[in-house]
Image (cartoon, rainbow, N blue to C red; front, side):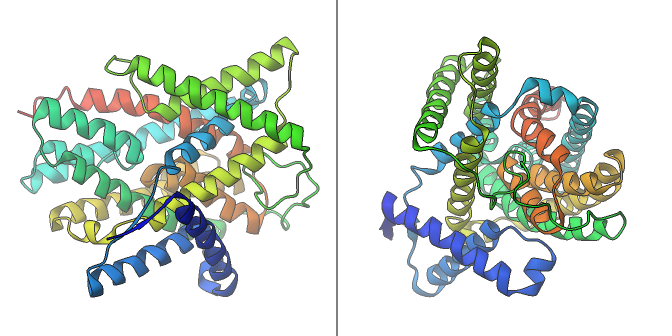
Length: 400
């Protein structure tokens, strides 16, 4: 095994992003279907590591100690940018998207449990191949697999959860672009990409120039650090209680409270441009690290029945985005971007959803509404609803 330390991992992640950008710029099919750069670069490196492992037996292991802080920093920036007054302006869309997302959560668990039962597998396997790992991602998968091991005696729950979450992360990043391309043929496309001088929403235009000063940059880092520290403290405090949810939910919530309280008191105004830059940096590096460190041979080792369930879930996500998300959200350009983001939410995680939407809006034009509601739904509401849905499914008398 070859161990790559923290600095080497950070260098590798930046090279992955550069590689992904070069590939998307050079390969027409990647640009045509708006595949996110981080997904392209990360998958190429993961495939290279797979080849090295299969032909030489060598396992290259990256130091992932920065991955969680980067993920938490990304969610902190979502919270810091969540102006409650502006969020109310997207109230109807927000409520509709929560309903659409909730419908998929229920459907994923019905499909997972139904197929697991039909194939003679433990119904808990169905939950793990449902909303726990697909909508919940690695963090929720790790949390619930621990519960399944300790309370239900499901010995391989952790391995199954991590493999399913990994599979979903990859498919979520690959599916959003083609779905958006398909839907764009059915609605009006904005007339070109907006000028970079326009004031973009957070994460909406990662390549846009934003003027900030060193002092504002340092102040923003301090705010993010406060969110991470306080969020971790609250998460540890709630561990084992009925309010236990993944740490990033508390980090985001602290960010919302902090930014809106400071604004209400008139003491300090969060500088959104600095938050946007740090959020995009954290998002890009997190996705690069998450994808380049995939051990694809572990996914390949999954039993065929589990792969069959995941395939059905992927097809379901595609059909749901086209026939439910797109239609319910208005059958317009905003709905296309929302459907693309929902593919990331429904199969991967909020960072994947943002990356999907960025890939679409950078090419076809901005969607302020999508970037207003998706981060909040994906990073906050979805996890609360998912916990409720999972606990309701666990009440079914089928896990004896």
